[in-house]
Length: 366
Ligand SMILES: Cc1cc2nc3c(=O)[nH]c(=O)nc-3n(C[C@H](O)[C@H](O)[C@H](O)COP(=O)(O)OP(=O)(O)OC[C@H]3O[C@@H](n4cnc5c(N)ncnc54)[C@H](O)[C@@H]3O)c2cc1C
Figure 1 (cartoon, helix red, strand yellow):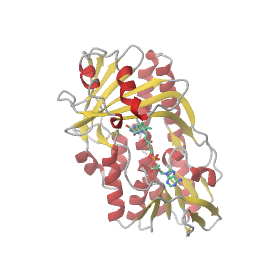
Figure 2: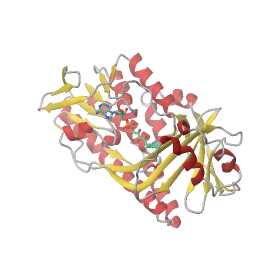
Figure 3: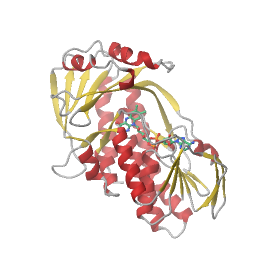
Figure 4: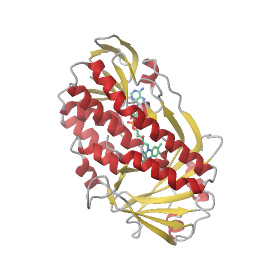
């Protein structure tokens, strides 16, 4: 089988499919495996799905285990300590903070170790699918004919178009900011800081590092020159004092900062056409407020491999995969978008109920 996109969904599926005995080739358009060095929260449901490919403990050991969230005001005074429930079992962390490059390297190395062929600087030019096989022409002029093709090429998926599946990413009116910082000694839990117009926070990702996050409401998501990123992020954090101010002043290098417009997407129809199928952000991209993107991508990857291994024909497996994933992903994308909207419109009284709904949805078994 061929996987387009060597991100979280594509590499996890490569691992799961190799474990099930499939021949696997991954084509990744970037020239190498380097990914932007920002942090990621690997939630309990994401780690639970990684358990299916024996990577839960590897990821926990490489990240920073998290058990609690401390909710603070803009001055850094702690108002509420929330013990986070864990879907991983008693005494296990609720989630792990982790450098995105660390997670990608774990997945890439395991896929390679299991014998997946991994190619970079390569993409798909054309796809032709029929009932029995799918043929793919790659950028380098070579072709592949295979049992199935997985489009795991992110929210702007070209595979989605090539398969004739519909779905248009929509800008949600929010910009996500992340800054990689040295972890202050006090940052052993998630900290959130409620400011006058938005909430910012800090998540530890290793003994040395953490990341600051904030979401900015912005009508026009125009790009910002790289050399202005650190100054602008400090400006946005200006209303905060105390603990967050101490960290804010260390955000000085443009390379520390990532700024991305939030595009939400749900492919509300079949996720497959012939023998081509979508997974991860290519099929559903939630708004980041629920922190569910990586979990959904990993779940897709392992569920699809399980159905492929169990079914005696590919069409049955693709239908079973869609049936298990569609409604769950739709509900979570909708809740995440509602959360983002409530946050943007300042309807703070609705946030807790939406968060509870989203977390309960994510915690439900897959
Ligand atoms: C700023 C930000 C912060 C986030 N933080 C979190 C978080 O803390 N926790 C969480 O769970 N989720 C988070 N998310 C969401 C999460 O990152 C995504 O849901 C997740 O990465 C989806 O994985 P994916 O493999 O489907 O897509 P991607 O990670 O986008 O990977 C797609 C891959 O396909 C490759 N590709 C693209 N086009 C082609 C092509 N034509 N041919 C070949 N390859 C191609 C890309 O280069 C990439 O490697 C965040 C998202 C953003 C933007």
